[in-house]
Image (cartoon, helix red, strand yellow):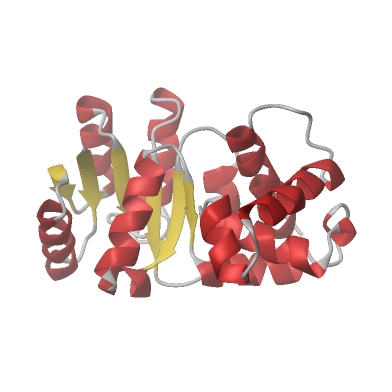
Length: 218
């Protein structure tokens, strides 16, 4: 699995490269600036990009803006964004087009190799990997928004775990529910969010987008 990594701090960039390589990834480029990142993404077309939000030369949201520009050129390019803090606007912009694997992980999580590698794999596979702290903040803001207000507390718990990229089986283990019970909750969520019948993977992403985009825009 081919990875392009963008991180301006040398020690962290080197550490992440070594970690990914040790877990079987091929780090085809490890860059430190926005222009280098854009060139690498467009030339190499990796299976996934792991991108720090803040990169030179602006040190604002250069990494995110480059990732979004690359996704316009390479639709569906999987992107996992790393950030020091919960920035709701970043989550909304990343999720806006609703295509391809996306993830938003706080940098604290990268020190847990298992969590970080699992997130990279999920995003590369077209899934979603949202940091639990990001989800909690956005979910709190969306609690009074329709149609989120239609969901029961249990359905909101299921949706939160869905946003982390967990399968029905994993959600059931976390909430001590059978897989069939989780399936009923997800079906109810889809109905309450007015998501038209389609494959469940697509509706899972749409369900998560419904509350993340609504919360970030609130």
